[in-house]
Image (cartoon, rainbow, N blue to C red; front, side, top):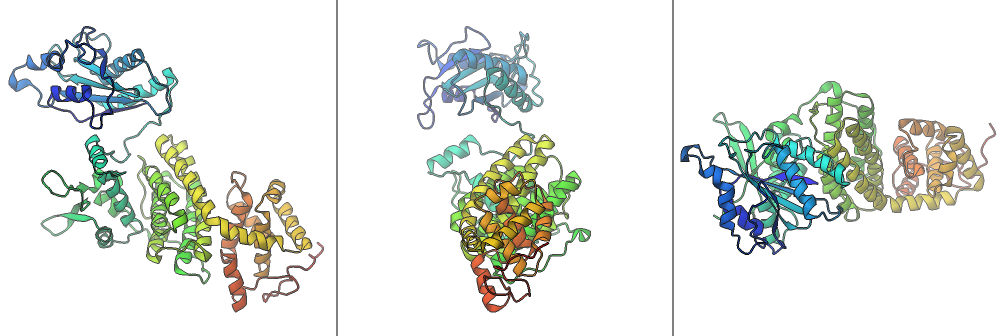
Length: 572
């Protein structure tokens, strides 16, 4: 159940006409009163003798009793209470009881207060009611409405429990500002799925992803086609900024500008500048990367940065963890910008969902997130990736690690009782899982074919290595459809001069495996990253032909001096 306190107004009659009217799209059906401060309150919806004016005069009577100088300019209070789509349809009596609980909880009409504000609750749809009240009590005083929105939310949680309704995760005041009803209606009239506020929030978020300086940030905003205004001090320093969509105009034909802070709390210029804080002590040395294309190399670096962030979330202080989670959002934004067509929609939805998880009341200690922010920058600068070959395979590798990172962020938020953030991270993880499945299908299928062609003795050899290294998980791994792909990867690691058992031990120690849906897939990507193997099996063949990586094949010894792939394993 979602209560929403709307902006206060100055015309009681105008809101009454809207509540009893047909709605902007004829969506209001059977408008009628379900409850009011007085049981004898006239109902223009059901009583043909009652008028809007009668209801307005009754509600405004305490306001009009005051002298002109004492009347509040905006005295109309408006609260809507909406049930979730999956909730059962409540009766008028249920909604009446909910309305009384809401006006009591918010301070409009506390229980037992005979001189409280006058109010009425109108229902014009199955799933919600509107409450209208005038903000002068019958004794001429003003109501005490401190933290009324928070109290309305708390009462909604209690109502959900009492009526067996869907439990909505409570907010903590760190969410981005939602579009107003006027903005939504304007978008509907123009046939737009999203409001300009939502479009701008996403555009600004993606422009700042991985940006290294203020000027680069503003250059990206301009490249995105946004109109930009900077607020400049007499010294010439930029104090803030506003942005607008070129086609979004007000009644005067002027662009409608939004400040960064009105889009999201962390998009104000001072908060964005915090991202450019550097901490030299936190700089990490990037490992040597294989010779691959630009987008693929950027995705490998993102994978490594995500692994480093996982270690931080496991062992660091809360402010450092918050910085890693916020920077993870930048990596997702960068991936969404540069993704191939078959993963684009899921990645864009994942980045939009994770946006809510990137903020909490725990302030991020910026400077500790440099590896992830550098990875986001590399992703943007490397340009769009192809959906096939090394680009596509390294995308799957990065998504596999990012899935673990985002799941860890969800668990951290849940432990801190950040309900909305934890739920948003879980939603993002599900979309990331879908994007991974799309990206990994082709490279894993090729590896599966290669593993199926290994000699039976060689397959037994690698199965023995798995049983020795992971005795509790071996049966499950060997039974998975992805086992042949893992066997092929183990063969490649040995052909490249590595000890497969040692690498398996290291890969399994990085993080728990039993929570993964397909443990063999996770091990494939970990091993290929750790051994610097090409992510795409076809690229491995190309490297073998040029002598960059020798991959063992039946009847032929690898250039690294390891035994041939079809040779019988040595007795131990």
